[in-house]
Amino acid sequence: MNKTKLLQSMLLASAVAAASFTPQVLAADVPAGTKLADVQEFVRDNGAEPGSLDPQKIEGVPGANLARDLFEGLLNQGRNGDELPGVATDYSTNDDNTIYTFNLRNNAKWSNGDTVTAHDFVFAWQRAVDPATGSPYSWFIEIPGITNASAIIAGEKEPSELGVRAVDDFTFEVTLDAPVAFFAKMVAHTTMFPVHQGTVDAHGDSWTKPENIVTNGAYSLSEWRVNERMVMTRNTNYWNDAETIINKVTHLPIEAVSASLARYRSGELDVGSFPTEQIKPLRAEMGDEIYITPKLCTYYYIMNVQKAPFDDVRVRKALSYAIDRNIITEYITATGQLPAYGLTPEITNNFSPKAPAYAGMTQAERNEAASALLAEAGYSDANPLEMNLLYNTSESHKKIAIAISQMWKQAMPVETTLENQEWKTYLSTRNEGNFSIARAGWCGDYNEASTFLDLLGSGDNDGNYVNQEYIDLMKAAKTMSDPSVNYNRAEEILAEDMPIIPIYQYTGVNLIKPHVGGFAYDNPEGNFYTRDVFIKAD
Image (cartoon, rainbow, N blue to C red):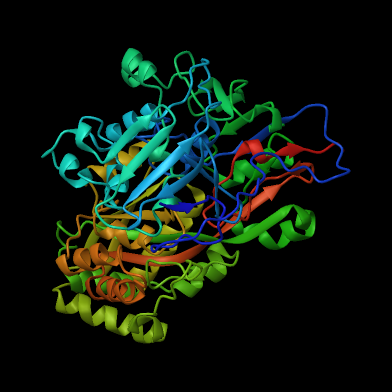
């Protein structure tokens, strides 16, 4: 067996030597001499009402933020993106790295006092791939090639045949079809969190209501007022509760950044956001409370390539070329975002994406090419391209949509109708394919290029894009020691087919009160755990 301790500096696809286990901070790390406030309560803006709190049904950042407080997977993620122990204390692999064995701590408890066991993970992972669950993230279990995952999702095998098993109560084993070097990074994702089978069986779709839910994370759900607030209190049965400091955390679903700023100014929020066009006056007013860092996220528009006119690559390319990304990043988002011409962000570990040819053109050249392409596709002033642009309710998304629709109109005969929907409805509309072109964004589930590029293969592919060469490239990349050549070819294909329109690479933008300590604003994936947070005395 090749012993692979959680805190090694790198995960390797080949054999690795044993590494001594070094205890790491798994909760609030309070600097020496810091005086803590008597009241340890934390209130933050969560951006939107979550679509679900069920780990196997969560889709999007709002739900994931909440799930990391309520549940805990095999591993956690450190502030810099490294793996840290969770329910598992360590793991090992077989000689060819196709079998991962996770050793679970025996003091992990559910909020009702039951012990968290390997059987809970078996149940959750099988549930994730079961077509009856309807998980929007079932593909995430498929990505690393867990044995039989694809066949189960396709309805060809039973969920019980998934390549996972409980060796005993505290030993969880996963079998992969081939070695995947980044697999351990994936198990910190919400889809792979355990759920309490007895609670799910007893309450069905209502199991996540405050009166029913059983959790194994640092917090329990005490109140959920839809579109108003979600309140959590410490789970005293959590195995590391003694190192947790925040007693109560309140997540507010604030979709309007102007409202977030107002509530932050009034003292209602400890962490909030703000309209980016106000960055200059806000720097003068509260510069030491503004935190801007690069994020492993890309903002883009997705097109339904099975529907006219987006089944025509000339239309798709024309719309992409005519967007002046520099105007978007310099004057609308205005907080350090980078123009995006590909799907994978530049900060992704171990991959330097090559810019496509159109990125090297001037905007005037791109506009000229866009106009020619649209004319070739049959559109003119007498016959303009008419379409709806869908986005989820947000001042920022609206401003970007207005600017882009004007860019299209100025460069070509295009008439755009803007359509906004609140988060849950928007997700449903996209998932059902009831759109022509829609806003989308993706933040990496782990720090490796496949977390982006797999989206257009077998992942969150709401635009129904299919390219067999692309699919084959991404499948082969999983077992390559250096998959960069496949990743770059995949990006080339996206530039050739243009099923999506990359717009910009995110930065994380937060307002954080000076009394807040431990908030992981600089995590590259935007992940944080309230158990790391503490409130300092004034």
